[in-house]
Length: 274
Image (cartoon, rainbow, N blue to C red; front, side, top):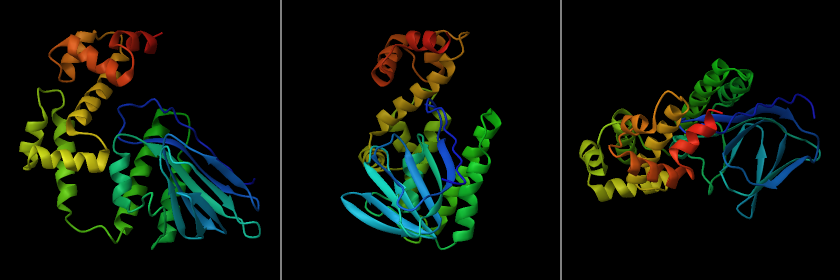
């Protein structure tokens, strides 16, 4: 295959809102097929020219130039270039704590995994720019994530079905902002709901819908992900890390950490600092 470019990223980025796992562009040979397989991240393709077939959800979707298709984490899928008019596409694979919410806002879903861009030139350019920024440096990694945010923002703007001033989304955005700014303090679900201005049950339903977990579980995971970053510095003790991410009791912190990461904070720190 010609014009290939790949960039595979370290997937151990617990604290990242978004991380680019892989990105590239490719001109496929006629009939080339990928899969069926599943991944641990989201994968979006934009077809620049030619055509092909996406197979998922026990259905086939015809995809041509100017169209996008998405494959979700843990979704078995395959896609195949047309035998006579094989596609050329750009792609990005990504995940992170904010990925599910942002993907939902684009309008792409497992029920509707394919749609046509209303602005194909900009869609193509923004997606291609992620691959163009790829390199094995911290600066390139940050630039790719920034360009991914711009690409997803572009898709969100193109999503005509998204209502302006979505109240549900406003609640969720405010809750996430509150957690981001206050996770190190002694806050709980009641504090988040009070700040957002809705009941705990409403907040629970909103988080379950957008993230598949309760607000409490989201908060605990966010804190533990922040703790992972701190534990990579051997200068910090487990007790200091616990207090820095909102846990007053180091023993409780250790129990929560192990339940989420499968190892104790001490073992995690030793492993990351070998």
